[in-house]
Length: 203
Image (cartoon, rainbow, N blue to C red):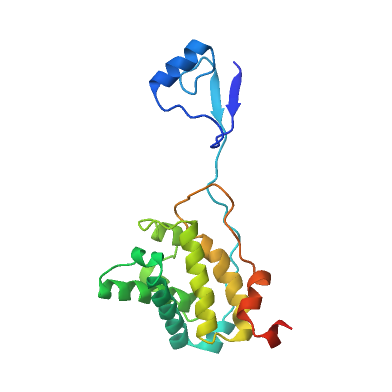
């Protein structure tokens, strides 16, 4: 029996009703469902995750726990002023708990000990955020606000590249809803360093 294979893309016509199926059968075309031949729809991957290079503990040694927590708070306060702000709890205490939890993750990831996993378990960012719909546009805002945070909080210039090379691919793992099937936009260090580094450092 011959397999009828088709690409599962938005360019292909979709059957919306059994009336349309019957019409296709009458016209002699292959029905999408219930036809005489096996029809195979191509596999589909909604997102490809790039590798994430977790930073060394040099950033933690340079900043310390308090400054890392302050950075995370600053970032979330910026997010509250954007459309992403609606994704956070409206209750002030619940919001504080969410930010503290995020700060725990950053402290541990940057070398400050198991302050996150000892309490909350493994991060699994996409799974943890799944009850909150986060799409590609939300991720763009999240990353843009981190760029602003790094500039406005005086993040050590010598550690910016290592930090950015971590959070840029990491941010992709928070996406749990897709608005299209295009590749997720990347923001490599080579493109953002001119915004983050002083002119002296760029040269």
